[in-house]
Image (cartoon, rainbow, N blue to C red; front, side):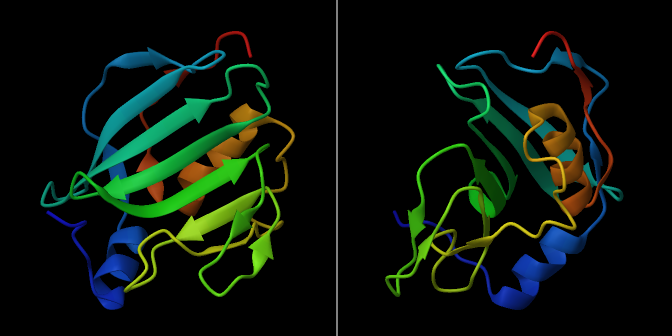
Length: 148
């Protein structure tokens, strides 16, 4: 079974839809090597999403934040503190970089991170806040900051 695909119009609409937390559970921002997968939904409850957070095991400035729809369709992924990414056309995009769903390619293309949307990339906590805003998560999960 292959990865499900979306047409670009549907993917863009899913990225733009306002997202809210699916429950009121309190979670803690993961430490070294930690991961979280938090459920989200559209305001009307018709679409479900996930916010995934993954932190580096040794380097806490390394991580991945992603927003998925329909269980496995990656809409937006931010990779920071890691290696560069090579796009299908051979272009190398340095880290940090942003993957945005592209019809026919899924998450295989990356672009430079827009500095106006992510001005605090040295701070993983603030970068998470910026990522949630970028993905239109208007009522985010209850994530406690803890010790970074």
